[in-house]
Image 1 (cartoon, rainbow, N blue to C red):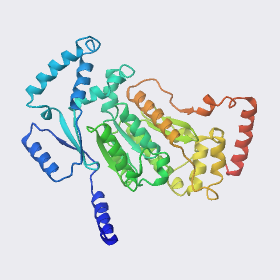
Image 2 (image 1 turned 90 degrees about the horizontal axis):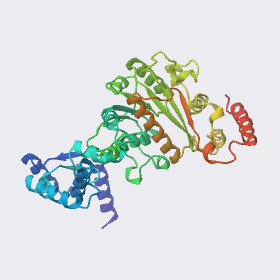
Image 3 (image 1 turned 180 degrees about the horizontal axis):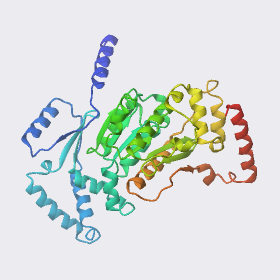
Image 4 (image 1 turned 90 degrees about the vertical axis):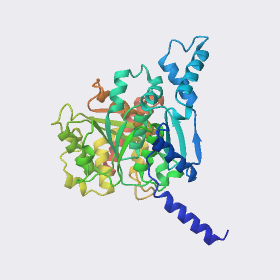
Length: 399
């Protein structure tokens, strides 16, 4: 094929891909109209892959509902009797449950109805998360602003059977340099981060409802974003919008959870506007700030303010060394994928605890893998060295 034809074909496919909606489509084959729609979809060639593990899903569901039978010698025979009746009663297994089509994957999957789907998905959570906790966790509406670390938070929440209702806000598209810390691959390069995250959430839980804010959060859009939220996760770099988030959280009396990666470690901040609406924003760590002042900061100013918030004494040595190299030998502050995953797990833990009204640190926690896993970290010599380096860093960084 000539190169001109190849380019034209590629351009057409790229244009088509850009129009694909990041939302699953459901089919109930007991409904004639759904069967007709699915026939048309398959006839169009849009379905390239089919996943049907429905019998195994039913086996797992049967075990979850009948745990006393699972380890008996007759379990498989008992299930077969049940399964044969189920198949006969529905006019064929293909009419049981739902079929869900993922347009961006050209994939069709056969899954259990939502209640049974959630029951099996969370079966191994019991009783680390009990039924009442799981229900509150699942039915909450969670807002996540910023989808670098925020994507790890979203995936950790949904992975554990939480946050059926999610609002995602981010204006950026996935770039290659993001893939050192965002759990995605080259198949999503150039895709809006909100769509990338929504697609992953839907493949984990097709029954989720994900609302996207691809323009990010602005003074105009933020009231809508907060409408109906039970809790908000702040993972934005924009300090002015962080300020707006806290204004809204205070007005709606909901908690803000924020985590910052710090080398291999995490700094988790919790602001309980649901408990203490009049508490100072950022626990007062940034001093007296306002929206206009924070809006005027450049990238270096933002870096300084974030460092002030985190505390120079808490910033790892290599992070300190890196920050003073911004614009010299590196283009931005460094971040690691492992730290993003640590942050995601930590924030998901906090969200679950807050939604269930359970005891939780109300201010800040440092998750320091260096301290826990590096033998020399807590020696007097290393502690003194870090103090000296932090003092030099504060002076050099203008703090």
